[in-house]
Length: 371
Image (cartoon, rainbow, N blue to C red; front, side):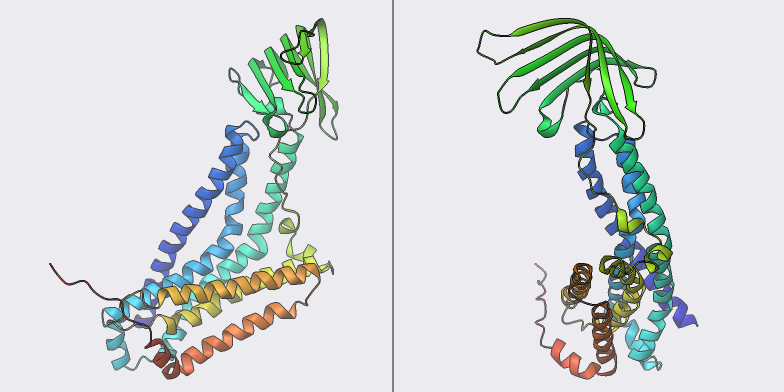
């Protein structure tokens, strides 16, 4: 038990460190993507933050198994280089027992992945759907920042400015709207002292903007045929805002809902979720023999081949899911890939001598001498 607790602590510490770094990298990438929409006024900052936060459980379903895989490689690899494994082997701890010890923390990680994949992630995706619906129901004026010119519309072809808002964004003060027709080249400019938003259909969120006491100019630049219209009240339909983002749909369906559907894409999603915990266990069995390193080869001699093997595993699973989704294969293909890599893990553990002779052919990393 002392050896088991020590090895489990080493694995979990490495897994936590690697998973944290990977999560920060991926989440920051998502933030950068959505912040570009927020900076352009297409999305609200609240939408950006909530959307990314609710996506994190779904990201962790893939991040945590990779963190576990790298955690085992780094933890056991360090122990091999520092001769701790030599001491354990001389004490009767074989490679098979090391794999059994690693399955302890791996089982806990697999249960966490199962909880995230089957329960927490779908609940979070449902919240993402609610956020998407709220965002799509907003008009472009809802995303405007008072006192700032913003390019909106398709391709940023509409420039809008408001001096201020009142009554929760319904009353607008000092409005400027400039839009150019891409086909005719006509430029339309609308000015108004004030305005308000009027929702005409609460079910669809369709709304008009009614402007008061202003002017409307239209014409082609370079031609002396501009039209000027002074109005007391002028209204036009406001398009919805948004960045043309795809909703979650299947990802938000619960396990019970997926079990009640027989279409291929629902089967693919169901078996994908069920296979994620198994992925964590199998890659742990693969990582234990792959972590065995020769000090002459360097600590990272097997790290790159191991990562490539993991990427092959995940790529095959993703491709199988896509084929099942399209109806080109049955769900058995997904489990055949798991079975193939499980047999590979067993061969690495029980036929380690053959694999060690192959890995001994890996050239050692030359070490620089002291100046």
